[in-house]
Length: 354
Image 1: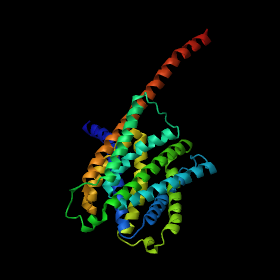
Image 2: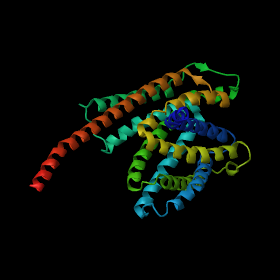
Image 3: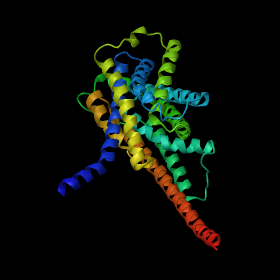
Image 4: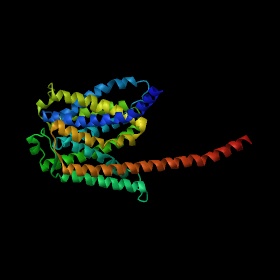
């Protein structure tokens, strides 16, 4: 009996363990990406190798779902290509932003995505902006608060509050005020493009609900785009060398854990617990990134980052609360609709019998 109860508890705990592990994987991806670029790789080469490896890992799923997957057509391939364009752009700007700032700062900025997604959904008329609705008002306020937090973290660096012996002197030179602002702006662009990516992804998955194949095409097109852009933007041939050590480890980690593992676990958690459950774990990444960044990269944690992160998280949870409230209202309306139709169906059945 005790063993059975333990098994049930472990089953219930799996989504929580899974999402915590994805946050570690995400932060690890930022750290190894920054390490790889410090070792001579560019964001173009890192994105190319990462997506190429992820596409190769996910290639078997293309054949595994061969008999059950919907047929592909030019329209779908075009949308997969658009996902690749948006995803590649988000990765390139994101890694550039991390290179200018730190992993903890980047993790905090990622919490802007729900707010930007809400703004873009309103612009594209996917959501209605009903000012009389409490949920819409809370989401709007939360979005404004999140953006204010991002500006605080970007424009106000403040004094150092966490510094270890591993923090090297070059870190002081690296994190110049202008670098911090440039990095913050790159990360804001990353969040906007990522929000667009999520909107397009939701549309694609409705038409083609085979997640692993969608991710395969996304990685495939992202790798092609990154190598194409690098031919015009980057002439450093040494950046393409996959030397044993930091570069090779970073590529292997990003391809296996950054794409294949992380995406698979997140989709599994979405099926088990829903998208809101997955989103609620994003702020955990700030804590993990701050700790790992200080330990492994010698990052310096500034007061501005702390204040901005707190403000962003408050705004993030406000947006999530508004979304939850909205979903509850929609479910309530649907239930009442079904209940109101039930008596009519009973009357029709009775009339048919007569």
